[in-house]
Image 1 (cartoon, one colour):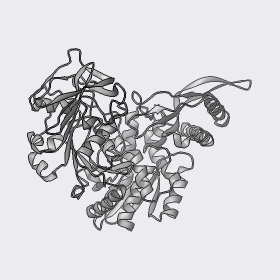
Image 2 (image 1 turned 60 degrees about the horizontal axis):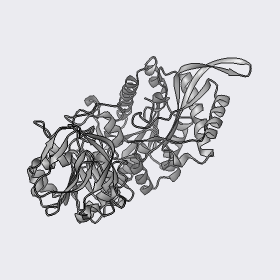
Image 3 (image 1 turned 90 degrees about the horizontal axis):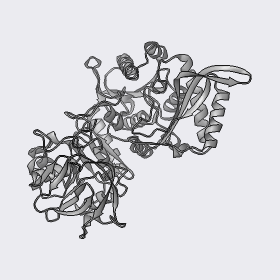
Image 4 (image 1 turned 90 degrees about the vertical axis):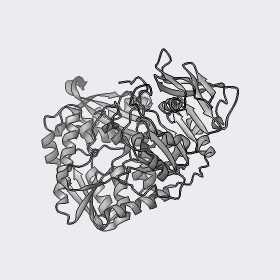
Length: 553
């Protein structure tokens, strides 16, 4: 649902930092004290945009330390303590015209530091500093637009307008109709006459578009110019994050025991190795084999962690429990919630066997949080539940350790490299916690899961043989809840159809389907049908994200 101001929506605040090529972050509740650093700090005030985290990503790519805080938490006292070197005002779904709409404290404009307002951030800046914002009246812009420069060029736009205009991404219904005193116009679009404005004396900058998104191709340059003008040295590195994260894990855990929910995927594995480096044998991993894993995956995970990393590991074979509870369930949300509940039950069971266990570690990532939780007070909706998001029931008596909660997948991989995990493992495609359950739309049966495992193995083997694995963000097979008529030999078949899925992405927030050749698809379909009993029809999913999700459920 599109709001009258923007189509943005956001979840929870997060702590953000950066390293070469990637980034780190953590919720304030977990990483208290992380901000007590000698690094220059940039404050992002969050007004509810779903893409606020992408602002942090662009800054982390520049090795700039930043923190995102929700507007309601940014008080005068907070500003005094935080002492930002620069401030960015995010987008958001509200309208500054409405009573009670979000505002930053007025003090932010008296700090004497550079400020950049984005979309709603521009509008609230204009509104508070003496300009005017009005509702649509035919000037709304959603999607791709083009900004043209004014006659005067400013340092913020160095590297911009090398051609006649710049492509940007707009998402606004309200628009600035009068700029605040002291501001001048430095860029316009057909429906945004004040697309780029600035008060150079105060170093206040405001843009109506979103420079952080992929569809503003030159947006990173704008952020680079902004942080350079603010005097940031770009000295926040992965090594610094690793050191700080280990220190904070030790402070949080003390001498208590931690159990880690290990799925065998990159996320939980990196979390486990990081925590193990921090607290050693105080960590016990619990690998839950829920019967929804890929072919031979359980053996591979157990071997790697027990033999290679020497991390205490409990192999919990709970396939009968999970598959029994999932029997007859077709609704995707009910599947996810059932799996989440059972994970909690299993962890509670094994936690009771570990003396002194007070913490549960999980490999929760930020995209999971975004899709699961609505921003406080905002209009966003839950897209899908994630089994590892939302905290723990009080009865469990464990506190969460989630060192990756605010990281994106590529950032986790970079951290894995820093921790010395093998490149072959770090480069594995993402695999969801609920496993094959969400690649089996409709009712789950053991027979369908076995068919799916074999088909997926053939598909991935094809991708590897053609040298495409590392070009693809994620690839898998989904078995469809339909049977189709086929002809094999001289006989009639009535078997399942399956869908191949392969996407390219940077962080999992958006994705495009991978453009396989017809030859590849034909060859793969032939192999699956010939080698996997139970499938007689193969399709290829060409849906991007959005509007679809990467997974099928």
